[in-house]
Image 1 (cartoon, rainbow, N blue to C red):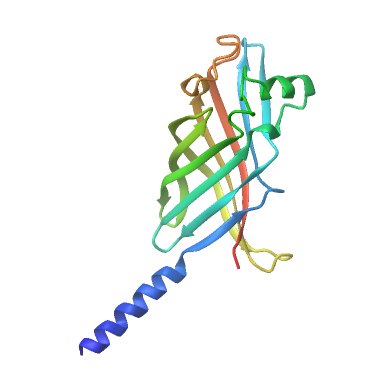
Image 2 (cartoon, rainbow, N blue to C red):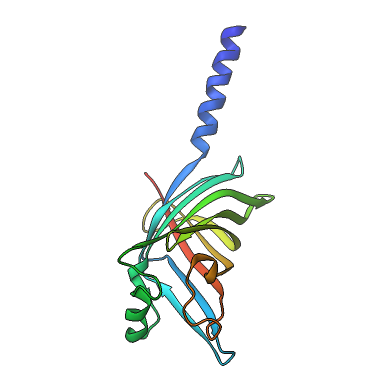
Length: 188
């Protein structure tokens, strides 16, 4: 009887660990973007072109982990003069702080649907809590990769001044809205 309990415990543990899957961020389908109000006249938008990282997801246990790295020098406003200025010590100081990172603390589910992620954003050497709202989440068997691919649309808001990005306030609002499109491919 003890042997059966031991075998059942081992099988349960191996089944539980087999449910969790790791997904690698697809850099050609992942672009964190941001926007901030400019003097009430217009909204300036930009994005980062280079993102990497992993997401581990256990949908059965409703848990996960996310570790994302953004190349700060890949910032793109669609205006080269602004891109150059954004990389300077006045703004993102990419020479001293080459990356922006996001590390999750917990995932939130509503039933079986992923609806949020609580984590920490590190920018300019400052780490603060930032919660993501997951507006859309879906996984499919990708026809080209022949592996599962998950995608999401997530949003968040934070104050850039909390991270020391103080330039041009209040002309540019300290409140920043994030919109993140992400796709990740299941590891083999």
